[in-house]
Image (cartoon, one colour):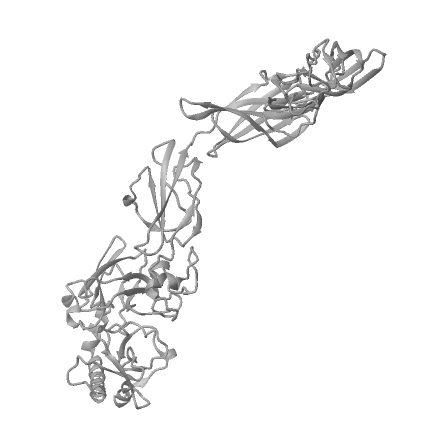
Length: 638
């Protein structure tokens, strides 16, 4: 019983080693047509041919090995010897004068010899004794008697056929582990294409394609291998590619296939550096250098992470990946595909990965790029620092906490009697670098303005680390109204402080952002003004543009909770206009800024801004203070 269906198809057209000289026939019919008519052979239309049979191709040099199907050239006349055996006329009306055939150095002599060859071939294949070896030579087993087949029921009987060793032919010696071991005999030229197809019955559905390209080093027998790739039926043919340029653009087929894996490239196409392919061929330049990029550092959470590449130039055909291996000679090259992955088998940690790409040519120079992968399969751990208790008394809170590693995203959900909100944005507020381990081990975050309702409140915090690992932390907070008064601390200005200008700002601190704040100022003349302020999420409060009167001014700052509880602080400031002017700031979101302004008496006044002494920039009293420190986040106080 056969375990493989494997056939070798060898086309003789154009595959002879010896040079020949072609001469045109004077008669309208070829010698094959005339001889076939004399032998009583009828020409068969292509559509009337069987799908399979035995087809002898006669060329101007003689006839080739039989094929299991009609030649691919649809223009060749075909004559029937029997219902299953046929002769194909591949002479094209030409005869070959082979100077190596002594005694046939004239056209007439060659014509006579060719006619005799045709008659001899017809006589041979007309008998059953000849048909069996022909089919067996093609790998088509026929049943035989048990006693002649060694008990197997089948016998190739190859010993009954004499191979024409003067022509190019293929031989399969073994098939093992999806690999076919093949010999190419009589390869006397420079380069050969090995074509394949999986279907000879309907060849248009599975057209011939080039499997490999050979540069024979042994003219008698050139061994090579092919991957069967699970194909149950595979037909091969060899073609001499020396000097073949199927599209006539000046770039030979062997060169195009060597670098691009196809022959359908145009000489006017450009390579990655702007040269035409014709220029590359004529100047022995690699037309397909691979240029690609990849992000240098990547966090991953799988042991087989994908490696997304950006191809910037060239057409990659093969790829290789080395993990913690810097010897590129160890690379195992496989056909390129976009699903490039690395194998990280040493557990969580750092990996150096070498990625190599090269073009189709076996002599192409690989391009290598390195990427550092950090394998992290453990989700981050979250710790909440605010609120410190699960019982809260504020309707709006700022959740605060930290993670044990660097985060890429934070969000939160809130569900209570007032409804459910999801995917609210959280923010990263800082990180701590542990120099002992060389990594950020703490990443601080806040989830602002979480609005609570009376009773139970469910809050879920979602965090994602740089590798894509996610974690969720659930909090069950119970809101109980706070009946105690808010805390209030006025930071600036201090009591009794002289202030210049016509207005000023009060800075204070309360214990909850939900509190409201205002200030009432009474000047020396009894004029009273009340200004409302703003409380930030961190409890800092600002009351801007309080009008300032000359001499003594009494200021009362009041903080109020929604429950009606209040707290107030009263102090006085002195209006003392010495002509100090601070210009509006032009820098934002910086930890240090430049502040400018002016004074009336530059000879007697010194200006300090947040402890930084200003320098006068002219004689008119204009000054400038550089690198003035302000809060790294939130509102800048000058």
